[in-house]
Length: 197
Image (cartoon, rainbow, N blue to C red; front, side):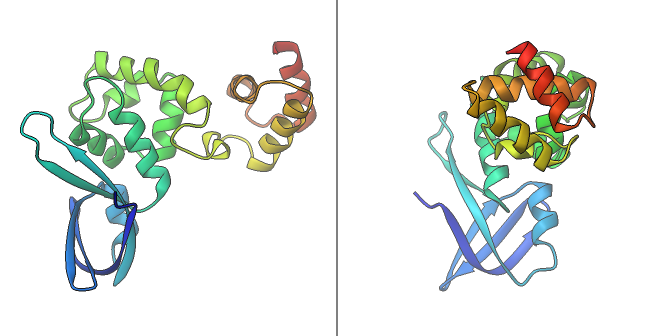
């Protein structure tokens, strides 16, 4: 399985990129996020995810500017009813962080604003992905929180894990605390989390 391809960018448009690697041109479907990161570059590296169409057996390769976006794509396509085209539409409409925050805060309206995503699908995405995202699926756990500084979150999380609490439970607690008080200092986060855990 191909993990990534690097080389000269031969063609680039908002939906596809062709990368020349040692004389072989690889055509990959991409999101608008990846397009924006590759635009203006002569060469680049894209991380690959190949999807097989169960109906006709055809293969389509998708390219991502970073591992984070690919991991999120894999999470989205793991939800029943979410195909690769829908996942690409989500990642074209929302940044990886915006999507994670929408799932964690159960912002169904933001997810529903993506073309082709209805209310039931948006609710299913939240329901099926919330726990996976809290556990760090599709990202480095420090990327889950954009509200407080990573340093504060890391410090509080490390302290609570060292006290013997489960990392997933710690992250859920911290996320809840930061929802109501985004600028809480480390001490306050730890004290509040201890009451919850």
